[in-house]
Length: 419
Ligand SMILES: O=c1ccn([C@@H]2O[C@H](COP(=O)(O)OP(=O)(O)O[C@H]3OC[C@@H](O)[C@H](O)[C@H]3O)[C@@H](O)[C@H]2O)c(=O)[nH]1
Image (tube, rainbow, N blue to C red; front, side):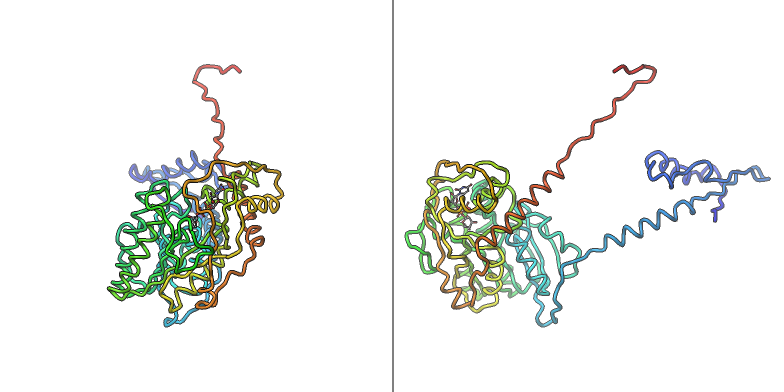
């Protein structure tokens, strides 16, 4: 069926559209308009009559758009249904980061309403994009250094850079995030009557003189060293939590998180696990700082997430260590990653990092007893998952590099181009 129209000088808009269409959209060929697309005739009154077949041409295009829209229908990971009574409104600050995004997944899949707040300094939209558009999910680009006014039942306060190169990059900002950011979140918790869980760190123990570290150890931190912005920032954040608890009755939970690794760590994170895996995968030397005799104990991210949720929903308001007590030297760790990757990389010894804690291992008896929690993912299994993730990331990076197309040579009118 053709559309019939009468052209007057002011009714050339459809033609303009057609001209644009012809000029800019030459593919696919079946939709090309040509003079055959119109029936031209002169009417008795002298006006030009055009019967267009645009509708016939446009309909297949509409069909294609409908198909595309169908294919875009978002498929979300499965989400449990929770009754109004059990469903909580949960805020996760730093929810687009490495740990925050895994916590987001768990709480979403458990059926809660999750609001993620992130300033995307180290967090990435990509980490939570699979929830965008879901009715239980909201993503807010916001820096916790500024106050936030929303209604929530629980706050997981994770916002802060966590890797030493990231938190040392802008020490003043790290201090503000941990001090002012925590103050703002505690203020919010007080105002709306929410419970707040602070993601604290094993770094509050500094370079510990007690081994393994239990929660009653006060720590050994250099208050003016390069790590102080984070260590002292988290220590003051803990202090604020207990001041708000005692003075204002805010319900607080404090998780002291030990070294954690897993998928979604940033390629430029700079912590030892991501560095060693990426170096081993690319055949580059594994960079060991110092002699490699310093120790760490690494937990897989899903264990941590389960611990955080168990702590939030427990009645334990004092600090709790969350970590895997399996301790290794950094050199052993380099060797293990090299073997798991099957890499021929060398091990390169670089100078020691200033104030680097020499021994670290959590005492997790409190978490075991009070939360019935302990890590369950064996180190090698977790590392293999992380290796798989970083392998994919490297492939993704290689496939998505922007390679500019060579521009066709411009030929000036009236001149012949010679090769
Ligand atoms: O390429 C590297 C990176 C790091 N290292 C060493 O590996 C050890 C671990 O370093 P990481 O940077 O992974 O992490 P750190 O233990 O120093 O700090 C971490 O502590 C606990 C968390 O709160 C934080 O994620 C982070 O601050 C350190 O001894 C470091 O010097 C290397 O030998 N080579």
